[in-house]
Image 1 (tube, rainbow, N blue to C red):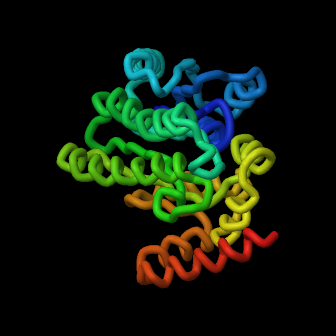
Image 2 (cartoon, helix red, strand yellow; image 1 turned 60 degrees about the vertical axis):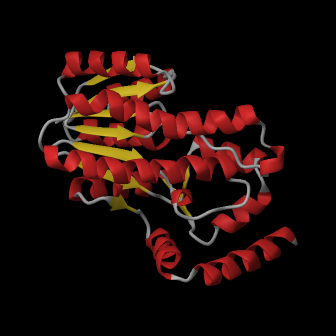
Length: 260
């Protein structure tokens, strides 16, 4: 199998690419930048081949060029995973228009650009996976840009599921709770403390088990992939609990977190 993974230079994308190469799959790895360590990890991961393309997912034309080049090098992908993403955690009033747009452009428009470039390569039996977040279903303090983008990714995945189903292409959306990656570690250093407190409800996952559970979910098929039991419970409560009740719960958590 040939897989195409964006955000493959670090975090979830890098670990997913490594797991796929280790089991013998070929991987077209896309990222805005690849450090030497990230390249070395993938080049030595296993028997599968890897092809690197450096690209900014905000650039539609560049994404198409990179995807086409990867397909020419390793063959058309049967699995496409868009894992490129960024986060900012600060109150809305402190978030500049530039920063808000950056997060939405990378997370949402990036998902759109990757899907637009990759879908023509997918055949019957292909699989498109967009990595969103529990923040695509559940709001959090300081996440005005992030939640806006990830709610959008979930909506995009829902539409693509309908539109691609007649072509035999499966679509999944991944909604993990917090996963400890370099991006999250930076958020913890510079972001809102209240955001971190509220995220404790769904819990936090280490990268290794999160990546393995996500890959198991991709292999198993189905639309919504939520790794971790606490993540599933959070999504269940959000879906089936009346809105007034979820607001009462979140308001109590907010009041408690604000006192710390």
